[in-house]
Length: 261
Image (cartoon, rainbow, N blue to C red; front, side, top):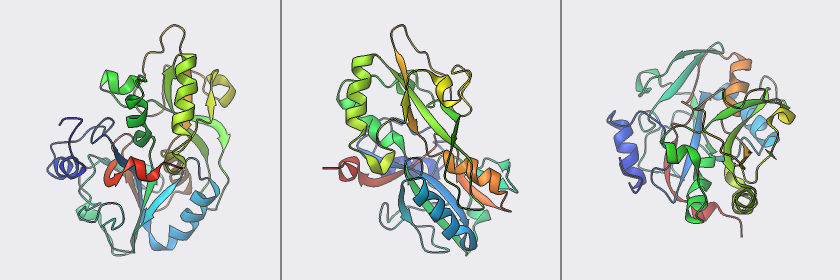
């Protein structure tokens, strides 16, 4: 798989089982999305949770019940097969991480595509800024924080953030660039001392992989689309399906269409 692959190529590789890992850096220039699939009866409360927490949960598309096709963002795709890896949650516990969820599909399932920070990484790279986890070929580090989301019962929980380290002038430039993408988390929520947002050990992310923070660099934190997974875990619904952290759905929508004027 090359970074220059088209979105459909990435999805076909996932569908065929040839891509089972993170999608960071793949199909640059095209929007990537987090995925949440849950029964129709829980769809409105979850949508309300997203509306109350737009920074970590910017909704891009919601499918019709039972329809696995995201018709606005990738009308030739199938959300049951076209992500590298999924997570299956039963009663709030992680039950499985399959690469195909066709056998689990229900006619009342509603799918949510939620903006992902991988989308704004292409503009960061185009500006000559380093994106450490892409350099290292690993998953972005993600952390639970002490910041409460606004609840929409039964959904509640702490904000999850992703982290990228930059030198101070680079951090200012990164803030300027990502501020143009409010539909995919937008500007950072914090930079500097991780302890101020409840992260005790930055070398031990809760999700993803640890990356080196080099001398003179400061960690910069963005709201993360894994936040809904934490809320879903606490809601303890009988069955929910999400993407596996870092294993995103690659859409046909160019990043530039999501940039604010």
